[in-house]
Image (tube, rainbow, N blue to C red):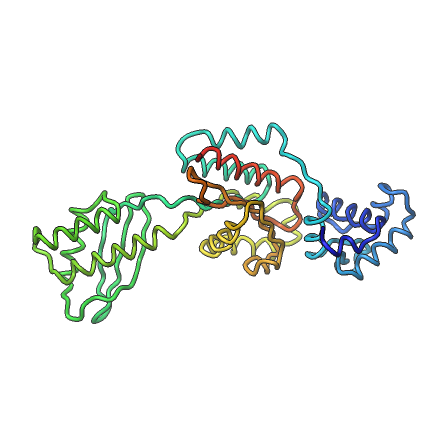
Length: 343
């Protein structure tokens, strides 16, 4: 149990829990009159205890309001040491399992992420196992001597641009020919298959390819393959859930959060940090640098494949005023259900 919790008297713990519960439920500062209806203490006694909790950094009062709200430290203390949670409701479990059981794994990931978003009133996020990339088209745009822009298009419509080094003096015609060759002869192949085929064609001189350009592309395909294998696919669903009735009162926070959700590689990096360990990871507000401006929380848990290895992370992103006792078990159940589907 957390040391600060052991430091609190039973009365302080009880009132602190009541304040946090009321704040998470209503999203507004909590006054002594609200708490006095739930505990056998006078408003004056409650105000005295709330002042002690504020001195300890667990509560604060915004602006001139007489009510208190938990600080980020207070929320962390509540989540780690006081919160009591239970398994998701049967209908919630059935909804999650139904979404996971339908269609392909990709379909299931998208469906269950959307369902988790709706059930939690947050944005749902998941990093998916990397799909096998298949070539559709390759083109080059010469930039300057020794440099060119390579444009790689995948069969599923993804596009990646990369500035690459090319042999000084290589002609634009040679680059066009190798791009046309890849598009005509290697389309539909995975990067590994295309790399192997290109190497065979270089060796056997089956095509009238510029050898330097062909070897350049073969090396590039190897790099793209390595990068792709290490780059998770991110699915985000339900950003609209973050714009609720209370959003008008805190437009800056919501705007920052929506902007942060556009930084997909940063979100992937954050979620990848939750791969370690067995349980649910909870990041509250400024505990995570990425969401420091919006003061948002992230609840995430890894899920595993058939070999027992972690293959992705699923979770939700929302305001710090989350019903943690409800959402944490929901994320936990979803990750376990995904693991069962993949086993």
